[in-house]
Image 1 (cartoon, rainbow, N blue to C red):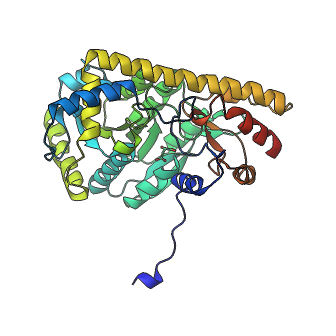
Image 2: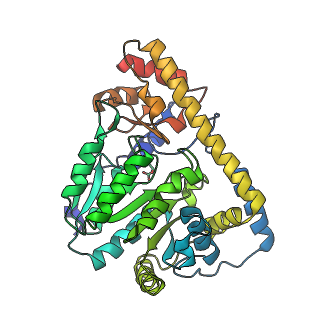
Length: 395
Ligand code: LMR
């Protein structure tokens, strides 16, 4: 059996981290994976997380199984963050939430659930999209198509093209949308454009699946989440995956959630029972630690304020790095316009570097995704000059 099995290709994002880890050059820089590093090049352990962990240590809780859908306090905190505390969706008990293994785990629970109840629907992801979206929905058994999204000429969204794609989708199609901080391009829709998307999605009876892995890295926590509320108000089925990997710097704890909005409380209860089946048959129930930390921070006013301040600090530092990158590239690569990097939102920049140029950077121990996506959140005051020099050289 095993002798006939081929070698699988390296993961397009995490495979870069593998290559980076194997590189013995002390000056190596990883601009591949979407991870926030501080100005010293370290993944921060947030003060709000440390304080919540200290509180939890005092309680010395036994490590019993969590409910299949996760910690109740966590699911509640997620709902209030995603839909807004006091949202009519919550008052009407129309939303159900299950704790998930990061944003990826949430997407997979949603994909498996949808495959069970809408087996013939096709999935549409943006062109381009997060490298794992296609593989994840295909592994759940779906045919995955692209909808028009990015325009390399403007470094922005081809919005007319996107609307045409949405209008052409068969009724019941599942459309995966990036709620904020589009991965990989950093090109987001305006609020007005979102309004038009919601109109078409609703009129054509599409099933929106909002992926929100970077809430708080765009304009702010509430601002980035606004689109979820608008979709929820529009009525119709809605799925939202969210992640605290980046916003709490809790990557390895795998803390995320899937929320589904039903048309009434009775329907919501049925959906939750089916989501629990998906979880139980995959990994039974989620781990305790990350969920407890996030629930503690979100439900303790002073820790929550600390988190919001720390998240704002990360957001501001990324913007400073965008500015610095644009200014330094203007010096080192005159004649090339990188102004668009300032307009992009979130952790990433779709830099326009070709696969060949990315390969040349790699020879200098600077790692980026083959598509030219770079993680601006991995730049700092000490490594940016080396990155700019290397980019100028390969251009
Ligand atoms: C990324 O896009 O780099 C992150 O979302 C990490 C991942 O799992 O791919």
